[in-house]
Length: 295
Image 1 (tube, rainbow, N blue to C red):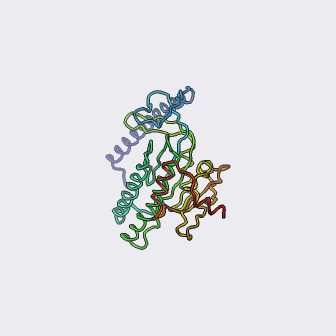
Image 2 (cartoon, helix red, strand yellow):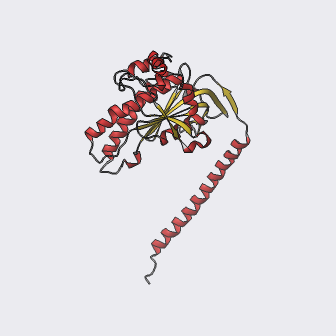
Image 3 (cartoon, rainbow, N blue to C red):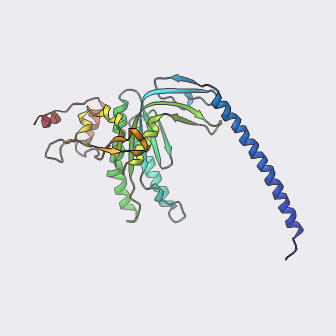
């Protein structure tokens, strides 16, 4: 057995003492955070109802004040098979280019429909719509993004990258309801937390969708179901006969609210702009749908 080097023994002893000191520090720090959590749980908060999605400057960090907004429509976008994209040296350039093109484009598309708030989360994002024709703006934003994904993003990927590149593309989800928001964290690193179903449920719908699909909750579909620009095709691919566009789908993660609807079609190249404009202007009835139904 080799003798222990005195310098190694001193180094080991010093490292052990430092480790014990650090353990004591982290235990104290965790105890301090625990005290703060106890105070947060034991102290009532003020909830203020507002009629708009607040800016970041309007949100509180130091005060226990939450801002509550009703009738919010959330659109969530998720990039399919993003876990297959590698950031190792060999692939990082390709993956980075895709993230920039996909996420940057998604932000630009959703922003055209005036969201009150938008946030990027990893390779996905969500946008919140409120106010005048918020439902119509949110729906048109979601369909526009899925159309961009199918018509432009994926063909560009096939053109520029190898054949074994993962099959990707945007998946969309949409939900509605009431949200409460507050900045949480410490100054300099605080972020808004959106408490409520719309963001969470929209994200679960997007996760359940396949690429180029939009899944909406039943509550959202019920609000859209009397709009014939939303529910029926333009008919140009079916000899002028408009057909229903939506199908039933299960989103198991929503439990008793799992019955949802899925839209697989995108904006028609010939009539898409017309339909989008009509929806945004509040139009709901179409003569061709009435005629087809009567026949």
